[in-house]
Image 1: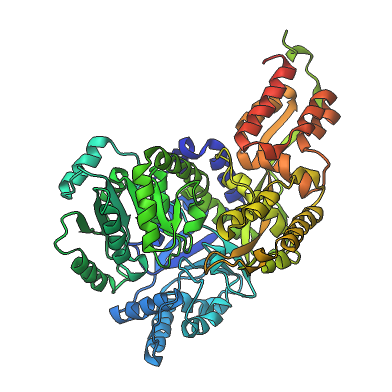
Image 2: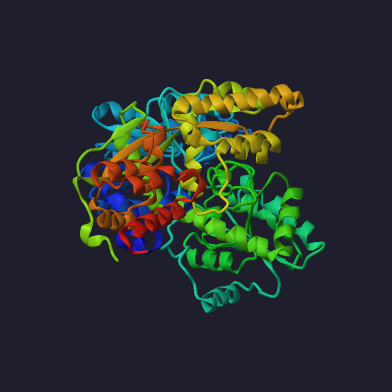
Length: 410
Length: 227
């Protein structure tokens, strides 16, 4: 596990010192992070790196996950879809199961902490237990696109959310009219992780050879779970539009997460759409395939993230960190990562994606400039150290209503 | 010849602070220029500050850097380039406080909409609205201090960009100082009034933060005879 010192050459020693200066004001505080999975997806990846760094900085940080039967994860997936605006019917039975599993987990977990960080909707019912711990502060960290939720799901969850001291969103577009503070903290990538570290050209070549992806033409890649919201079928359509005039290959690389029962169904539809097309490479990778993702992104000419809804889309920052030109939908947290025509291209449709990919493939100098700007944007705004700083600031400002807070002392 | 030997020493050392910004959503959004102009007149001043300044920290590596959030949204998202240009050209340095800056922005929008009524018809799609964000500033001392101009230069090389930002931007517009903390200290503690005046005349908005740091260091080195 990387120590804070190892980040200094990337972000500068003054950034690391700021973290130490902030953290000493929270030294010894017990902080519990709770989410629904230890592997798969950006949240688990962030927590795996974040919690050890919080400990190094002197906080008593713990990471727990809730547990439940497969039927529970089907319910939480339905919630996830409905909160991101897709039509879902949540029956009384589903709602009861959601609450029952939440309450079972509340009995099992030790939530006696100074600060309890609940990630995403799955563990929301745990907040019912906060009355047992009157001195605790509770934060709800929402990683999903909550800009247009289905009313049934939102109305059901709203009383739970309203019971937190603050909500933390990735984008202002997700904020609702709520009585508590709604802090904005973008997620981040870890530049030292296997997924983002520098790779030698021979390492990249070896991975592509192993995955049977020829490097004879420009590669267009989307890295995402096989999920309707990531629009893999739209990516295939956009790619075919590009290929009419430019030779290229498409890689769709995804993987399952233990809290996503829908992935197989989406993958089957994508398989059908890509059937008999030798230029389309579908990769169902296990969640530990960080080196493979790293190599694929670095080998690509253009990275695509054509999501229909997106909590944040960390794959965009991953690609930008590798100085790759990115074409991505202007949804969720993506416009925070891409300033249109400065650090990537934002699109709104399949046709727009086709046009933007062609622009980048035909103008390598322009593509290079966007990628380089994107890397600097990520260095200053979307690395783990900035994320850590924002969490420390959130903890330090809990309970205050002032616009300016002065911290005294050295 | 180097001026180091005669370098004055401050009675009160300069302590570098840093200001870290934590953004907060207001839940307010605008899809038309009319809605936007109206909300701009009502939102907290920390919203005006956030949208006219946070890009300086977020995009400081870009030359040319994007203009304020306001000008970016109007130009790139709404597609009203002429109004975007007018908003980008508002000289933030010319306004002593956020209230005056807000008035200048809303007056520019009002005048534009009167002259170009068709702009009222423009609207943006879902997800492209202007989302108003306010911010909390957390101000904290750093370990960097200086009693002489040379020590000041050495510390200035080491401090973080948010620290530089705090002393060059925050002190003026948020705290209400007529000039930057640096020039006040140079004039009052080191009696270097000519250098203080040069620092005071520097328009921080015309630089990226790193070029601002380099410009300040060049002025100080020249003063020290090290240039």
